[in-house]
Structure formats: C-alpha cells, structure tokens
Amino acid sequence: MKEYTYQWNASEYEDETKPVLKITKSSNGTFQWCPKKYQYNYIERLPQDTTEAMHKGTIVHNAREDFFDNFDIKKAADMEYDELVDYSYSLYPIDDYTDIYYAMAVFEADRFVQALSDETSDTFLPVVNEAMLDAEITIRAEDYSEVDLQRDYVVHLQGIIDRMFFENDMYIPMELKTGPWKDYKVTSMRKEMAFYKLLFDNAPEELLHSVGLSRDYDMKMWGWYYPVSNHITVEPVKKTSHTAVMKGIARLIHAYEQEMFPTKFNARTCASCSYFGICDAADLYGWGE
Image (cartoon, rainbow, N blue to C red):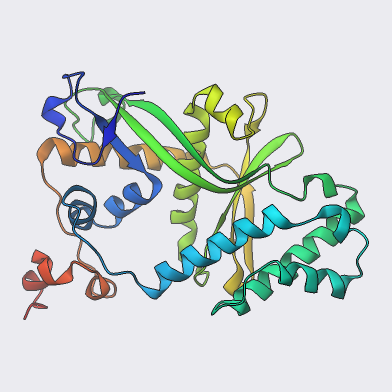
C-alpha cells in the first residue's frame, strides 16, 4: 500500500508519488459531525482539550482489552456465580471507574454462565481483541453523482476493532461505549459498525490472517455495548448503513476537492468544542466575545 495522510491535496491525486487520503472511523465521524472541526483537528493539526469523556474512554477500553487477555475459561468454569463475578471484577484495575468495571464484570459473568449452559464456552472469548485493520477502497464518481466528484478516487481506510466474536460460523464485531445510551445514537452506531464492515471486506487477506480472521467467514451481525446504561444491541448488518458511510466518504473527498470545510453549528454541543473560540460560527450566531 502507498503512504497515506490527512494533509491531502485532491488536485495532486494523479501524481503517484503523493500519499493517498487517510480515513479512519474517528476522522470520518468528525467530518460528518462538523467539517470545520475536521479541518482544525486533522488537516491543521490544532490541539484539542482532553475531556473527561475522552480520558474515561481510553482507560476503560484498555481495561476491557486486558480483561479478555487475562480471563481464564478453565478456572472460571469451576466457580459458583458470586465467585465468578468477583473473579471477573478482579481482572479490572482499581481507579475512578470501578462502577463501570463492576457492571461489565456482572455482564460477563452472566454471559459466561449462559455459555456454559449452552455448551458454547469455547466462543466466550473474542477472536479479535483490539486489532488494527487497513484497507484501500475505490470511490467511483458515477456512483455519487449527487456529490459531484471530479473523478474516481482510491482512499486508505484504517481502524481498530474493539472486539470480534465468532458464533454460528460468522464474525460479530462488538463496540464498547463508555457514555450513556440514548436511542438517537442507533444511527451513528450503525455507521460506525458499517465502517468496520467496510474495513473487513476490503482488508488484504494476509492482514486478516495476521489478526486471526479468515475470508472463509463473513460478518453478518454487529453490536454495541453501553455498560453505564446496561444496554447491549446485537443485530443483522444493515446495508443502508453501508450506503450512508460510502456517501459520507464521498462528501469528505468532495470537501478536499473544493477546499471547503464549512461549520455545522449546534447550540447544544458547539460551546464545548475545543475550537469554539476560533470558529467562525461563534460570531455568526452571536456567541463570540
């Protein structure tokens, strides 16, 4: 694969010595949320504040990765339920997020008990535990005529899949979120999972093999877990979400073509953005100093 970058120039696309556009789940999500924030963060590389939510997300994600690395199925199989909960909880660190860890410990203890009952404990642990995937895809202008792309483009995708489970001869990616669940989040969650599906479908076979995945099986389900709200969703893959992600990528490319990354103002969320003080929307909507 070629080199890839966020500091991409669409007018130089035909120069094969130049890097291709890099797109991650996070960068694509930021662009769809607000193109101006994308410009500040990924193109201009302006620093942004580390919020408590961001800090919590990093710490809890790392703790959950360690949990699955250290969980001993043979040891757990001989435990009574209360002992199993305590064992699961003991695999998490002692820090400011113990309430979340306890909720996850109970959830996994329940899941393990069910797996023992169903005689499926061999699929309790994920086949992928925090794995990076890379892929290249082609965005064809004729498929996105409403976006008015100038040409076809090859772009580079990259992302880390939290967990991938294997059940009933299929892969099931599961995304962990450390905030509260709200029903309106379902659309954005489906788009995140569709990005993973896009990665999986287009990653080189040797890369899939290196992280423990095989082309012999497909990703037919996906899901997400919000321990703070004790919420979990597992559902069939949605083709409409795949289409939405592809259209979003086409719009991202078009912004580079036009060199225009407009602001999307939202009175509820913009004030907490790290770039609010330099954003033109602050003055436009009367929020400036």
